Picture 1: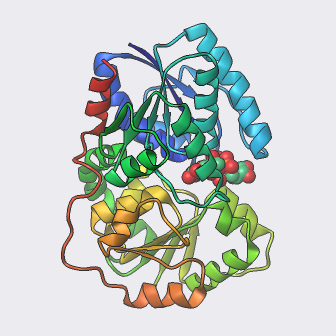
Picture 2: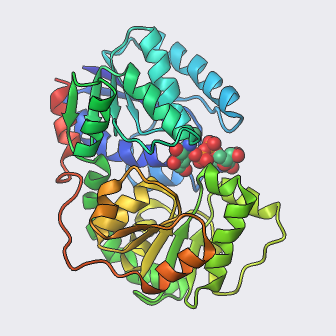
Length: 350
Ligand code: UD1
């Protein structure tokens, strides 16, 4: 089979790393990078660190309003699909690159496989929720990471060609685990950190970065913690903070975004992770690290039900209380598959 995989944003480079290794054993895969993320720390570092094959096409779309960004991607992806004529187009997750890839392929009658199908926050103010719904309804093969995702799709009438394959981010994590373990002493030493004696925080969702009240409340919570907080800044967050007069206490260490292996090294040894990222909620769970989620809802409900993830929103007091006292239970059951999602998908495409 000839497959065009559309990627463009940081979490998609990570997913592609897991998928491409397996896909290329049996199929011809062409990687198309929309260029949604373009800084080295948001894009190139993943191609280098995760051994992702080079993209044959790089559209260099960059940032812009949702309409401008999605429109430019749609045009570029259509041109590539017309010349490559693949048997399948694969899209990952819920970004504007996912939406554009699915739309371009659907209009050309090329079958679409959606990896990470069926996730819902039921909050349509999130751009990602719109992207997921459209991608799922256009897809010909829906690859789900959880039973909840299957049920969400069934509730919308999607029951055909739906497969539970597990989460491809677990495939990547299992590949990375020994490498990240080996790197941990050096990474912690460089940042002057001790295992279990620091927090790791990330924020990038528009609901937090584009709402000054929520953003300031989260930042104040980080300032009030009594232990080091490592805070790698997403470019969107950096811009939002630069436009304010907020100043950080010295225990909050602002850094550039980390590469995947460095990030896993820091995640596995953190006391807890405070985040609004989807991927990091699951990674925290797989690494056995308590997670405090800075959102009002999550797609990864199983992590909350397990007691290892606590939804606290953006309220300063709630965040501080959770950071100081949240203790997950001793039970830690496997979630989201067995780390062989990519192998299953490669088989389904045969
Ligand atoms: C996107 C995805 C989100 C995903 C996230 C991971 C959508 C709607 N959202 O949000 O689902 O979880 O990526 O990071 O697709 N920027 C840079 N340099 C970069 C990348 C971005 O400066 O390398 C800036 C842009 O100028 C823009 C802002 O960051 O102002 C946001 O970028 P955007 O492409 O909208 O996506 P994310 O917020 O990262």
